[in-house]
Image (cartoon, rainbow, N blue to C red):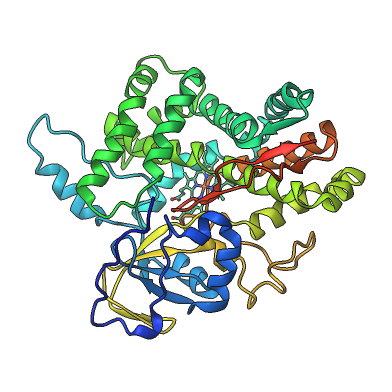
Length: 411
Ligand code: HEM
């Protein structure tokens, strides 16, 4: 797909803070996402405006991302204010479709705090730790299935089925429908949402495929996340079908489109750094450090925000309501925070922000780390030295979640 058309630059934005970057369709990003990210780190201001995808801000420097993420008085996650959604819902005619609010990710504190709470227990380190053996069994089977072939397309054959199956079981959706769910999430993530009406239409597509299961778990609870959410109370009232749909759209996309990209990026690094494979095979206790450094070196999510007021932020003059994207990949490659950021170093004294920072920090981080560590452990144990098939170059997808489209391995 070609670049999105350039939007006219608003008068209050000086040329000095404009840098042309299409987070979805930039050709250099598709060729090598992290080379392009490094180029942005070197060339662009820490906060800049791009005319692409309707025109929006990008918050790229580490300190700027950190400050913007932590303070909803500077940048809000509410693309429509919570109170306004309540008003709009009250005004809907009887029988009109529910107005979806992705929960808790599009809320600011204090509302956000109330709605995040029911999820905290289910995603706790203890609850996720119980999944370790299951994840290991699945990973081992997927790897053993491809081992004799001497090659695999890693994204399709391992990076997708492993975390997707783990998530669907945990969440309570039928695993046999994983192809349908993944195709839908991929389509959902492939374009920008600038129009709230269109956004609703697209979210309905997600709730439609989950509707039968959500209703079934209300009537026949099981030991899964959807059943657990039905038992929650919101503002003293029992959960409703609308509450469940609001949570499910977020969990569905977060669960089905994150860890697979992390796995693809990490394995791509291993496949092009045989010295690292050998080092970790010799000392597997270093694998968890490698997982953290992979997450930093190839940070891959870009969450959206909106300027909460007219403000000058890191030299950029913004108007209230203007859209901004937190560019976590460049934040974690910022030389002001990480020395020689391009280098892969097992021990770093600074912590990455791949899982975000502030009130919305990722709830799935414990699960993601378990899956990544176990995959790398089993892969280095079960496969001989694996390399990238040089005849099949890697391409990347952009958007709010970056990752490789395909990673052809040979061994
Ligand atoms: C390596 C994998 C993952 C990465 C890098 C990642 C990254 C992130 C980031 C950066 C945020 C903050 C978004 C913001 O500030 O607006 C976030 C939030 C969130 N993530 Fe993840 N995520 C990963 C995996 C997962 C998984 C597997 C799940 C669930 C199954 C999950 C569930 C969530 C939820 C529910 C939120 C919203 C939290 C809130 O609004 O309070 N994530 N994630």
